[in-house]
Image 1 (spheres, rainbow, N blue to C red):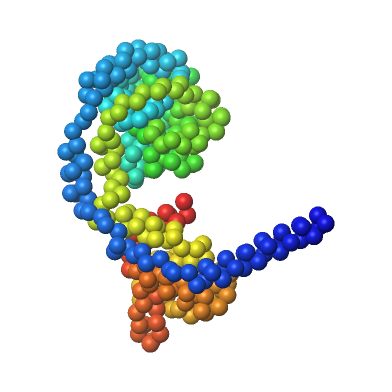
Image 2 (tube, rainbow, N blue to C red):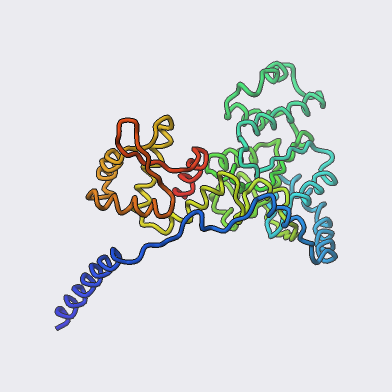
Length: 363
């Protein structure tokens, strides 16, 4: 009896699955288009944001003064070999720079703006090595052999050589410390695993002390146990400032604004997320072809069908046409006639925006 019930239940699941597929094929398609998204000019929106009056100013000033009373403790933590990690809502840029200017005057301070999208970790290490080298020459505590080596340009050295120099030799003491301030160590330009590994190795150098801030809720997932407790050696401080991210936000497009390639990519992603995974795969093939054949007028439909069938995204020409109809309805794809007479498909987006779109689709 129980066996029959199980078979009936399995049959019911199978029947419902095929019914859902049949109904899904005849369902009304979404009519959303890129042009339907109501967005405003970015400059206009930023001007409106800048005119927002701050609130609770007195309470925020009292809160910052409480943090300033912790400056001696933070400086002591750095001298003990710990790294400082500041987290909490609000921009911490002003707070960290005030701490550096008032409590770290005896050391060289090197600032990294992690919120910059185009930051380069190799250039960061080169600049940091130059700061430490200038400090060593000023103190006149560097042996002549090291001096000759240090005169070689840091730009020609490998990452390992730069890290070896930052780690120092036996004759250096804590008076040669360089304090590295990283605003948004979880920023988009520093968020990849390789960059975080390099930063953790920098933090573990004997002549380096690190102070950093994070704002992303998942920032701790960037590090493993060894990086947190051995290399960065973080001492966590909850310091919500409730200050607006005026400077940090300058480098990020506003969600409700248009006028740049990043926002165009985001708008296209919104539409693509409403489509099936196979449809997204077809669009990705077309996008990759357009980027690699920018001089051509588009991708021939026959070539697209062959590629999609090889990747098991479509099984027939009508299935591909169904996906293309959706793309055209959403104004994601357009058709034009090639010089040889065949129809070609192209995405009416700039190459820069298309690259950003592919990145967004893989995340």
